[in-house]
Length: 121
Image (cartoon, rainbow, N blue to C red):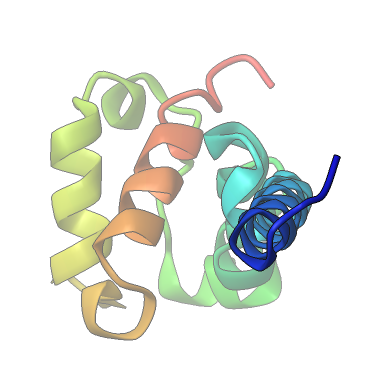
């Protein structure tokens, strides 16, 4: 049985396509976008917010005390919806600048979700 050039090309293209799809799945599974929102929110919070708001959200840092930042674990903050927290993070409020331009909408949403879960931590 003889294999034609056309059949060989199809087999090679099919094999390459399978390899490419496999690599895409592998890289996507290990990419930062594949992290859960909670992991992304926690790492973003640690990098962007903890300097003033403290790791635990208490605001118990030198900059936090001088700026009189709110305790993010407080009933007042935790009573706010995720959308309300997002608006504060994205647009800013009082002395806190907005972060939508520098972080983007998705990261601001991840931070809002993370902060809404600080109660009791």
